[in-house]
Length: 354
Image 1 (cartoon, rainbow, N blue to C red):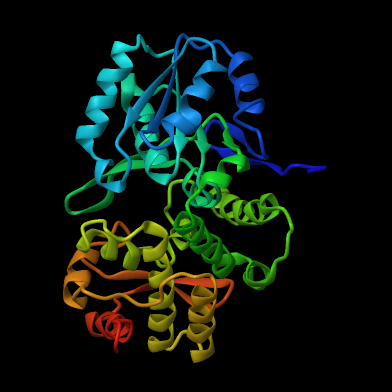
Image 2: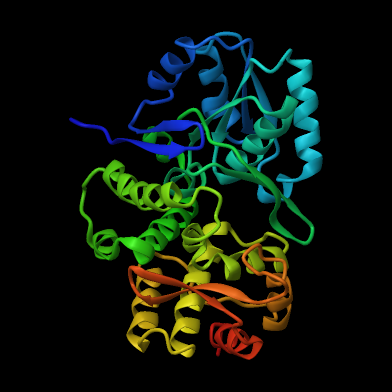
């Protein structure tokens, strides 16, 4: 690439860089760490990525060691966080140490939560290795773990010192994980960059770094307005109330990006049902989801059970149902007091065979 995208996001304690280029794990991240004085550097990753990138990164860093956890959302829990605290202590970490999250969204959330809470907070760097994490999960400072009742119900806001998105890691990304990342890119287009949707569906051999940068710019614009999710940042959860319910009720057999895809279609249909958008919107969203190889339907889950799971969604207040919906592509809105019957109807319409 002649010019690799590099952006900055304004966090609570200053701006942090988002560096998007091939080879960032090999050069930019090690140089960033060596230029600073950390007592120890803990690279937290999963057992799938450790042999691919984990040890190679540790070998390039001063005073570094590798910590691995099992792969999967099922391990993004308080018990795993507790085990990681023990690993950090055993590795000699103190308040002058650095935690690097090397992985997808699960690792970013989990390692970030550990960094936010270990010794009341240590320095943290995001090194996302999946498309989904590069365009969404690694950005904005939200970290956390799941409870049996739902996703991300225990967490914190912890800005990283920097984000290093090494697009070389996408070469080993399974096709299903690539598609999951595209769901979050589509979400970004629906929130604030409608031309990105057409570009996503028709793009040729242009560098993926440019697509990632466009999605990052959408998130950057939103989180800089509302770091603590008191207003417009909730728009970034478009489709996620449905998605988190699908994941939880299925026992996390659904991948996050695939659940988001169904959630985007459900949100569009609910928007039409509530009289906020024209039927064309729902048709456009479903066509885009299908064209990207993502599911627009679900099977084996009861709409009533999904509704019950949604009651733990963080956007709901005082038991009142609140959803991120759309008036049009690029025009999200919050809808309060959404009747259960409308939500169930939208869900029923997306059951396979409906």
